[in-house]
Length: 244
Image 1 (cartoon, rainbow, N blue to C red):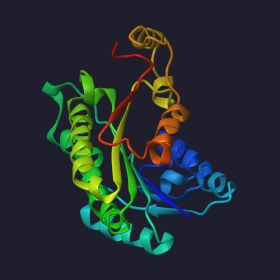
Image 2 (image 1 turned 180 degrees about the horizontal axis):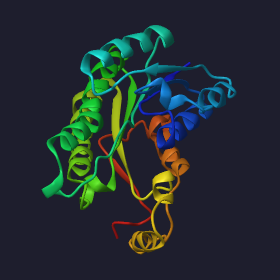
Image 3 (image 1 turned 180 degrees about the vertical axis):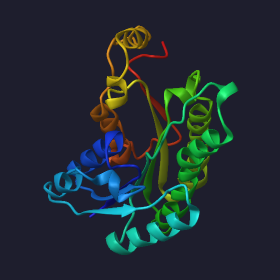
């Protein structure tokens, strides 16, 4: 049985990706920063009900040594690591003039350094296997920038460069590396927007609606599949036509 690791997967896009990959037949290694993230959450039960194995690995993926230990534990538990989805991410928004060093550094550590940490150690397992799929969650903010999100945009833009570099370095070992760049996705965060804010955002989107977490998961599913065996170094924008 093949194994997929999804970071930041207690809820939201990460949980949707984990559930979709479980439906595709992968054993699932869930990850988040604390047990509290899984409280009142039945994602583990949902995945196990699909007939695959599922375990939770608590780890701060911005911490290099913790990731090294956790990846080793996952390899010992599941024997293989076939798919890595680098989904963990946070925001600490603010205009540049008011953004603190802590706001900047924290977002870079969680969003960007985590990709380095996870890809280094899970990628080493994949290199020995001579096969693997790495899928990174970038964002339209990394493609086009976004006022009030210098830290977030920087982290997501960096992920695009990291994706292309890893694709070139590991391609000869049978490993692909791609990124997806979601646009405005319906989440509890978008539910808090005012009507005026929603209208302004939707006017930028050709399809005039938000995306769903399942639509992100569907593209990740493709990139993790054999159908995408000759796709690498790509950034797939999932934004309903935001950029047009």
